[in-house]
Length: 304
Ligand code: NCD
Image (cartoon, rainbow, N blue to C red):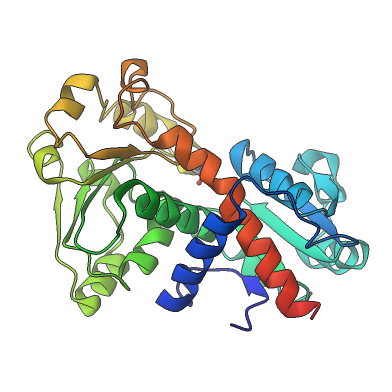
């Protein structure tokens, strides 16, 4: 694999996904010096807790040094500097870059200015490829397989970039069925359904959750993406559309796992946290190991 940059899951192959899952598992709990002598620029122009800190933790676990932008308003972008100029300069300060940005397409724009290892840590409602990979790793770890599963995605499929990203990866596997549970206003964009059809993966869309929980192996909850709404009234109307309680989890198979990229607002009640089905904190931990795998591999391919 020659990959040095990760912008979208659309161009990842099954071989690459399987490789990164294996590598994440191999790096689990380890501290290495694979990135010793290299500096990572951690660029977050949009709020983040897990993605930024797990990326930074991953970089430190591999022995890298770090420079960080944790807040767009602390940079010259606030003064009106373009993303192009920002990247042209920062790529001179660092050997590896990862960036979150509120604009769709920002990561693709950034790599026009740098050939160095670069990872998209989320660009608007578009893509969040490292989350998709850590979610695949979590499914593999929790269920022992990805093939043959029925996976339910619940909540905001219109703006939820983590779902958009993972669908491109699931199409490479023999997934049994994908179930999208959304309010009518937050349906998954048609291009993703077309992609599943092309891949021969069965899917269905509905707005009722309880009816479908019994057939799910994975129940993937999402947050209604408040920051992407033009009309906040609409957000407040849709907020609370789905609340996963322990009673709803009990409708499912005992081995069903509940995932969530987090942050959770009100869509999973706290009583679910203690159930063996709740995999979301393990999912967040897996982010460190998957990001170690990605940083190590992309850096190795570039700095041979
Ligand atoms: C997700 C994101 O930023 O898209 N969070 C994350 O990276 N763990 C999901 C969300 O914000 O709802």
